[in-house]
View 1: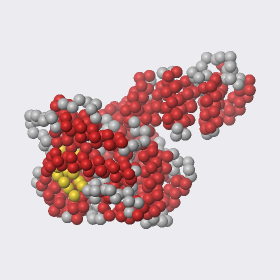
View 2: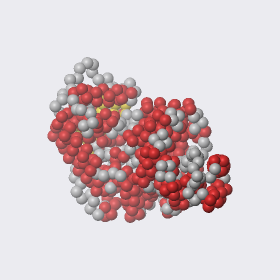
View 3: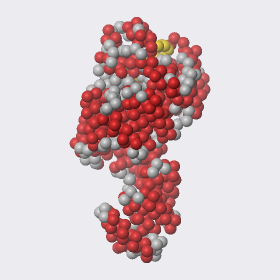
View 4: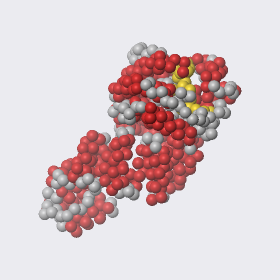
Length: 590
């Protein structure tokens, strides 16, 4: 984040131009001590020089004297309120200090004065991206590119935001443009790897991460991302090697510790346990890193049987994550209300399906997150006629605008939803006639699904609600759409909303939705699996009884569990923490 010391035309309060230019040259050459001394001398003669105060702010920033730097920029603005660069520089400091609301005000003030100051627009984009407000992030990044089409960091970030929105073609288009402009910039290769991974092309993802590492041998994030792909593939040994390499490069890399914690079972004398505690206690981590590390420490303490400390860390990690997301359960309460209201309209339209029979039939596997949808997908995708596509965002991407009323609901818009979804699904079919979409939250879209895809199969996975809610609470999910998981009260309320909606769908559709009990599946695997495959209309194949042998990549929190044989008892773990929950789950019903 550069602090600007742009040299504007001189005024009487400022030193002469050659003096200012000399200061800027020395600053560019990183002679900060020298410039600091010279500026302070000059200020005795030019105490009202907004340019000198701005330069002094930039030097203090480089010397990590944050409060002094802020005072310098505030003095600059006091002397020259219309100095856009100083407002932008102050915004940068405020952002560094975690004061994002104040930073936004400073950036917006800078742009009000000087709309072409694209650095401030870029900085706004970064804040919105960090907040996962991708619509505003994209809007600001595109504004930057209107002014400077080859701004490297904007291209890199925009490509990543498109990826996070599952706009993969757009992501690759932007990143490949950036790659041509900046072939030796490792971060572009890394972000290409992220997009390939999210597309499910793990071979290309590995290639991109390795290219990034060749360009920057100390690129900790690329090693960490490489570890994630190996974990997706089930190669846990290679995953750990790469996570540990990331930590070797950056011993304070919270995410890498967290990734290792998902794989290993800790013992009291584990060196990484000790490292995590030391880093956690330093007090120098950002809130996001503290949250990530708190989840990892919660897992570690749980492994060694110290449930009280485990619960304490999990509570802190969840509380911080909720704060950072600025999540409120009222968001989901409103959405569930809109779902029922929109259904009255959806139900009026019966799409006339004409033409050829579907060549790619969707199988929706849905329910609460952590209810067992990944296991069910592994079972079904063992079948030779089924391609497992994982958690797809397409129902939300194309369906939520209809539900929220952003797109008018009519037969034409519903047909468009059908076409858009099926076009995306076909790309993931690998030539097979059935494709699974195991996005759990698709339970919200059953009305849309039934209307738009009468040929589809819907499998609702139902699991002990206390087991589900605990399993959600102990995990640090990346998606903002799972904001309800970071608070016990929110989890219980969301489960109530889910339960109510599922009962609503049962009244509407009855046996169209297949009800699968997770505990029954684990207790009576063969019997339940045979009934499940019979529901799909597929001929029986013995491979469906060995989901642990399924070699497909799994990119969910259940990646390790599904590589084991189906086992019983996982729904009992929450009971270890029952006393610490203080009755939080008492209201949960199935």
